Length: 171
Image (tube, rainbow, N blue to C red; front, side, top):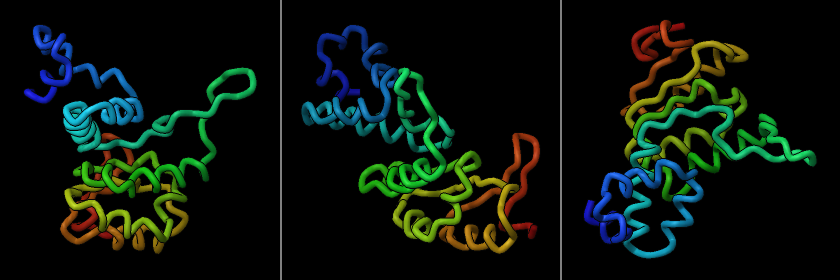
């Protein structure tokens, strides 16, 4: 709270507005603002921690490319995979993740050989939710499950109604 007040003294009177300022920005914009000063950096990282502590991936998470006509196009799955792995493995951002919901992640990302190292480098990771269906075969899903560190709880889910605790049941 003190960091935010020091960073935006003009908004100290309207502290509620200052506290939610970052909510209206994309993560990349928060990072740009964070570079402005030490207090902005502290406020920015506090916000980034809260925003990504419980991260749920969606297909439109990354800024889409614009077509020549100016329309937004979703990224190809291969590009989503490379961006997602780079994002999750980012040197500072990986410190934020406590809960990951990967149900909407392209299957190609969940079967990448780099993924176990990405998970191992997330010191605060406590829980992962992943898709129950869509795997090419049962061994692919088992390889993914064994890539999850042993201290991390896991849950395979299809949708909001159907769940299974991956540690307690076999597929």
